[in-house]
Image (tube, rainbow, N blue to C red; front, side, top):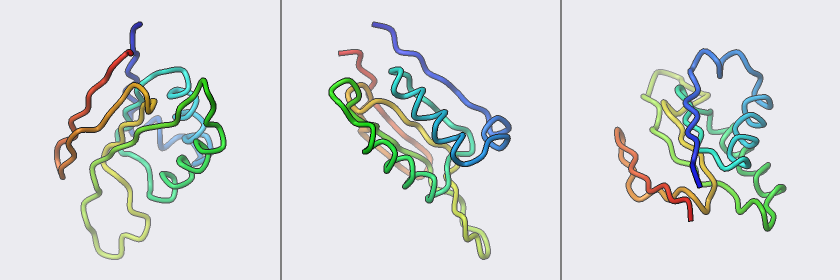
Length: 110
């Protein structure tokens, strides 16, 4: 089985509404793909993605594994956004190490 990795530009993400982004990511992951978002998701979008995922978990869709680099702190940055977000199917992607500038993950097709 091959695993597709989708690398989504910040420009593409900024052209979508919050719900469009979440649906785009969730549909990609449900298809078995790893989705990498340049610019990432806000903390509110991450929470909503987890909420949507929990609704759609089934025998065919085990849920998601999500990891991201934290945003750089700024003055009164109220809508914190990750710099990069990686999302994949929970049965395919396992985050093994996460630091401020490094995410290591194992991707398995079994």
